[in-house]
Length: 261
Image 1 (cartoon, rainbow, N blue to C red):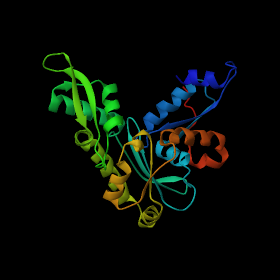
Image 2: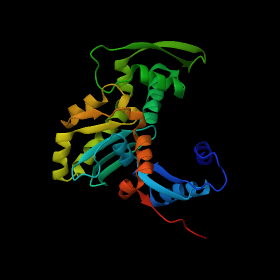
Image 3: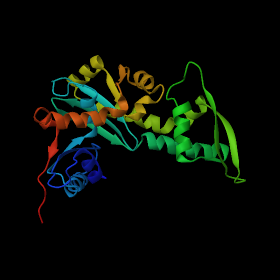
């Protein structure tokens, strides 16, 4: 996959040794980081730089990561949710959990099977999350039809779902995200916590588009919550800025020399 991306950028396939910036979850081990770097070198990179996803998300969202003030970012992706407090170009406190977009989809599949004896596919569950999903009660609740396979008869069946029931189905993974934010706030130094109260929390990632997630976090933490502009692209934009402004942002990157046999 990396070779394919490199080939799309560099038309000259021979003697091409690009520099790569790869975003990784903040909670991975040193061995896993090393594996990511080796994959980059095997794909033909001259040098591989590693950056934590919450740092890339903060850069992509336009946060002043190099200033001596506290910036809190919550990146709700597909596989993981990354929560981090960033100051002076470093991650001061962070937490990475597996409750994210994919776990919300699985929660919907499990709920429908348990409560309605209806089996949904992953794509149908994701569409249900997008159309009816919310983390906080809506001013006007929504409803829509969902189609799946009856687990008793094996035949297709259509069911009308409401946004309030979908919200109950998603409650556990959403609660895990809220708890992770509380945990990181509890580990944050008091001076930076004061900055976060003033500046607020920034939501990025596809999960930031979930209706009411910002309002739920605002009610649970009593801190202003802002959804970044183009939250889906924040991590990618942050990685791109790291490549374009390598000298300026070098301090936020982690690079290791390639291990020789």
